[in-house]
Image 1: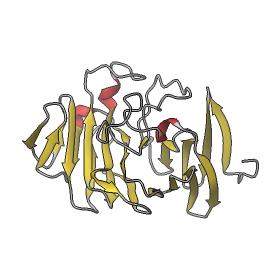
Image 2: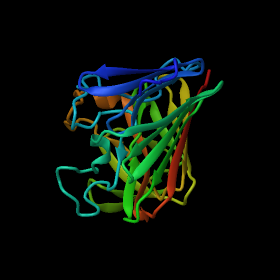
Image 3: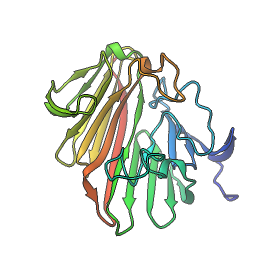
Image 4: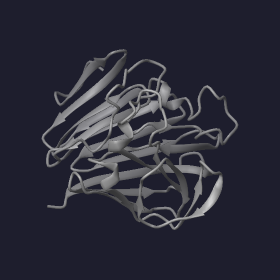
Length: 267
């Protein structure tokens, strides 16, 4: 960790070690706990692409509320795992910095979770996260991306399937392919691998493009008025989660799941 390139700096956010990245193409922040990317702002972007709770305490053993939590090796209670780790232990565990590389157009950071998993994060004009499951034991995964939007009531998520499993009602629902959110939403969409979505963020006058690779689900989530830990009562107004997931189709050894995120302004 002492031989970091000048573009990378290790700092402390309360109890957590964080790598701050300053590069001609972007700025970013990655917490070693959870290999958790919680900020990425390309130089052409006027706002951070990821949402982070204004009251995030950055404490050990508590998942960061925002950015891209890595939910692994299970998601929810789908594999019957301990309730104290509702989305797996990976996001609560310190990962090791395996390598980093600074190039003219990007920074590449690779982190490992013992011999279980590794993640490669490439940051520049675009953000690419590549997760690899290393063990024989089947696992679930969600790259639980929180996106920063100007106003949830002026936001539309496009390119979704027209059916989903509603986790709130535990029923299969017919829905529009473009979703405007005006209430608590927690939907799991089954998709063909290599799908994509667009977040139309009218308040910030931008589009966030999300390309999922080797996923079997997309999860759409916004808690609306529901009280959440490390999140104030108005936090839902400026965020939406569009998650890259493998929930029902379990990961096998050496399988990879990726997401590529880009942003463009519409005016």
